[in-house]
Image (cartoon, rainbow, N blue to C red; front, side, top):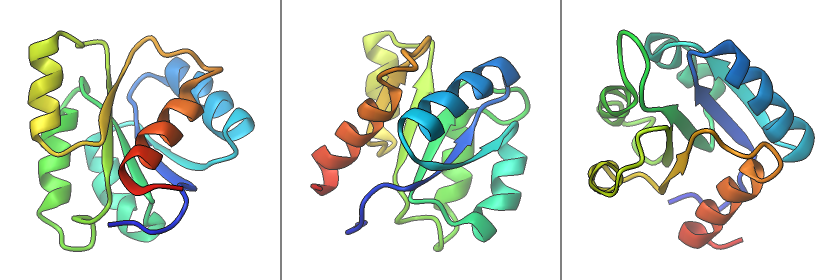
Length: 131
């Protein structure tokens, strides 16, 4: 269980335009250090070197979707304690319940509001871990 403030985020997002909006939302507005990966495989390759405080995972990606990626991350002892949040356009109540059963801190709906995305992440983090 993390006992530090949220600072470093590894964000898996295959859409470059969403990455550009997220860069403003998370880095400029939120003040986070973020590494962006365009595929699940890229996340698996770079997570060990970057060691994020949080995985922010797009649910729908080609090749390896967010839930499959999270399952692979959880098989590595180094990544097991790192919390995750899903970000997705698939936000039906039954889908959100399935994601939460996977142990994520929460689910953020797309399209997200760039002005509040950082605050949403901080709120989910603080709800779980305190400030």
